[in-house]
Length: 324
Image (cartoon, rainbow, N blue to C red; front, side, top):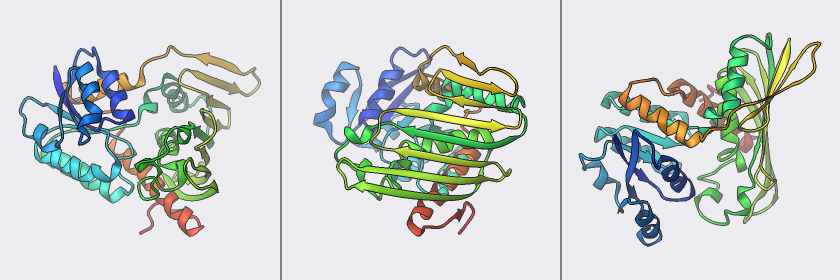
């Protein structure tokens, strides 16, 4: 059994704790949360030891790994500390806002001989796994274009805190919802070459009313478009277009396959708990040395496109992903 500590007991940290309950190989036994009073009841209900300092769990030999569900501005210091203590790390996205910061974190964990796994939970959706398999098998022919959209209406519930800070969450909804689509794109068609992005704000927060639109050109010549809206109801779409057909993911379990000369085929997949699946993959990386499904190269490529999009919003021009 892997005994883990989690740092950060906000909404997502608590979701990860819930996903870990009853898992056979990874058990969260301790929580790090500076706001002790707001976390006591939750920790008591779930049998978690509560501390207010990450250093306490890093010095504890009974803690085998650390999960980070903290603001990304804290990730670099925390990941470096975990690496120095020899603790494997599972870190929620975004790992960083800049590719260079992420490279430093991966390098530190590599030197320490511990895994660094990044939580992109949409990767584990059955429909997203299926679309990657369809593309890899060549069913769509030559891939020409990819489109994506992720909106989640979280802005209606989040009225304060770091998620509304332009420094912590630049480019509107791109940092939260849109990054999932960028990761999906990278996992399907590879790294991006250049990005043009625009942020349109309709009302200052809270809650923010804004839209983000992104045009991408990928290294292999594929084109792409992405959109995210923070105030509209939940919507997910990733659509891959090829010379012989297209595949469109509509949610966790639904995919529409269109082939030339045939009627559209709707495929439904068995639902899973994606958070449990990514925690199981983290456990596989620790006790079975299996490669984590979201690779370092993919994390860095996603952050390169993300960094370019942030710069494009600020400067109003297309930005190359390798631009200094």
